[in-house]
Amino acid sequence: MEIHICILSTMTPRMTRANLKASGIEFDETGGIVEKFRWTRGQGAYKVTLWVACLHPVVNMLASSFIPYMDACVCWYHDHDGLSCVRVAATMALFERYASNTRLMVTTMPCLQYPHKSNVRKYYNTLGFERERLQGTFAENVENIVQQHFTYHKHLD
Image (cartoon, rainbow, N blue to C red; front, side, top):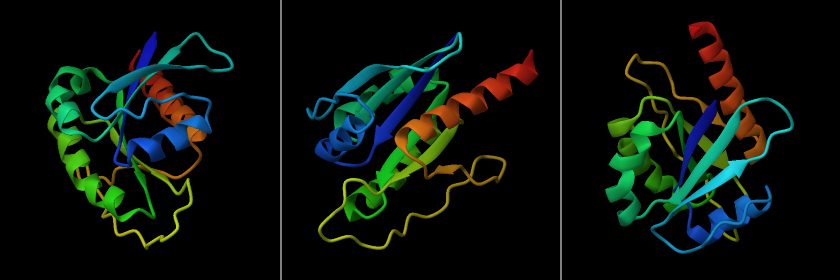
């Protein structure tokens, strides 16, 4: 079984690359592309594929062709970058149009010269439950998504 996770970053491509590099992933800084990565796991028969992109008009146009087929969607933002926080609303609106299994993922790396206090509002699903906000490291967050996916599908069988 393969799990596909879409990570749409509201950060600049340079900030996204810096965050992914810390996890051993080489991300291309070119805007408007969607990159596919294999997430290496210690054990298990499941394969995890990460689809990573930055918010861009080209990605918005391509969204209908790949987001509905994802097992999980993540809006990744920098908590101390004003522009990144403003883009969260557009990203969540895009995800809510095509997918129901969405989460928010927060990062504060790399450190910014002029940080600000985040004012990203809470998001709710169609049943009124608050969407999960992941606050661990990138690796911890991906493993958390994978474990929740396994738990959910184990109970469906």
